[in-house]
View 1 (cartoon, rainbow, N blue to C red):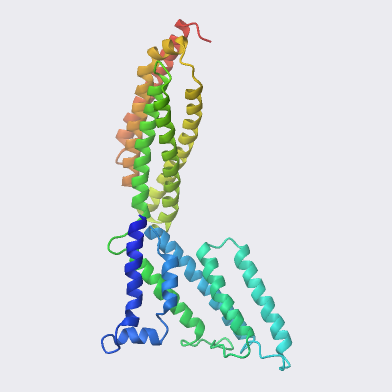
View 2: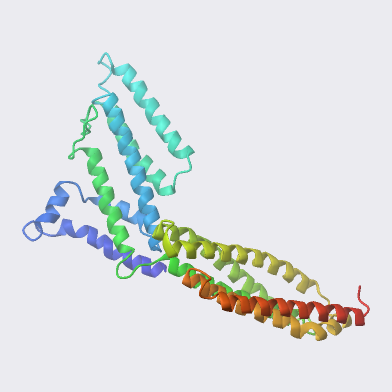
Length: 360
């Protein structure tokens, strides 16, 4: 993932730089884009802060960066609307109150941007863009280049900043789709399927270890390793589910898949907590004669439960890929019935074995 992101980023940074390298006779549009400040070095900055490992993340960061720029542009437009020209200098009769009003406005904007729960990119570009405008407003030695009195100039500094944001973010979003899209939804499906197989494998190893005749440090170390890998992958699934919202915006089959994956993610988190508890039981088990005698009688039904759970989870993954449980309802009902039967058989065998061994 990191290598692919590096290749995409380097290629499209070169794309951002092409307009500056081509002669005017070869690409008049490129020269026009540079002259109007639609493309500049700032476009690369927006691009680098926007592109990430999935298309959903890229769209999310792009929305955040553009929102931050819009907030900064809107604030300087309002400041120049109420106080045209900015701070006129200490010699002006209105200079004192404009200076204090400008400082109070800027401090309030910075505080609100940091206080509210904005996205990271919104805060970065909102503050990084606004502080330059704020300094230009206060510096009476230099012309600001902003529109005054609530007018809009398409050649003004603030509008140019919006154009730079649009160009950089647009190139980043295109990079998220070319040569093929890096959909977080697809990665969430793949991660969910991997987690299901890992969960089944881990429960099988746990049951095999616990129902054995002796403590095996090598098997215990493998189980701990599987748990650590599973813990890392569970975090990835949660991130992919969140990023996938920006690929469907809460609509359609992908949204249904997202909600089903959220349930799977919750189940995986709960299963991981249970596995940690079972690991403690396995490590503390002395594998004495009573343990061996009981496990010989219940090992088969225990493994049967694990196998039925694994088969049921595979059908659940198939249901997520479809987006509903209608097509897989018959399989789900059959697997649930088989699992309930295996749990009943295990319960009966366990109680019978415990009674025969005089266990409380």
